[in-house]
Structures are given as C-alpha cells and as structure tokens.
Image 1 (cartoon, rainbow, N blue to C red):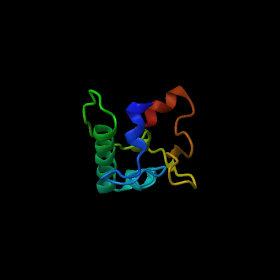
Image 2: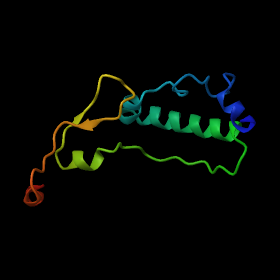
Image 3: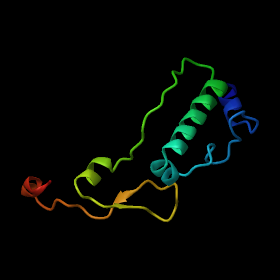
Image 4: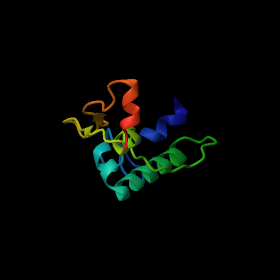
Length: 103
C-alpha cells in the first residue's frame, strides 16, 4: 500500500488526481491529438513520481478500438457519457460472404 500512496496524492506537479487526472474525457482524447498526448504524459509523470519501480515510460497513438471497423464503413456510436468508449452502430457484415463486398 505504501508504494502507491504517492500516486493518489492531490499535490502532483502535473495535475491533481480527480477521477480523470488529466482532465480530458475519452472522447476528447480520441478527437484531439494534443489532449491525448497531454493525458499520456500526465500518466507517465504520475507513474514515474508515484510508483518507484522499473516502469518504462511509453506513449502510443490511441485511435480507439473501432478504427479498423470504421475504415471499412462501420459507423461509430458515442454514448452520452464522455468517458464511454465508442461502440459500432451496426455491423456491416451479415454473412461470411459479405466480406467480399468490402471496399
């Protein structure tokens, strides 16, 4: 428990820790690259300052779990809560042979 106590402190240098420490919703991050980077860097800083272990900082582009289906024509659906990850409105494949109609 002592090891992670500092992680939940409200005196962090990058930001206090409310439910979402970086202040941006999932939807904000998916649509704004700068917000996504800021959230990622805040998470890295919190990990480096709060959890003394062999953590290796990382950053990655989060295009969401629907990037590939969207590329094939599936329309994403965003819920009312901004931290809800998007779902797909409806499948575009209804039978195995439909795969040959993808463009």
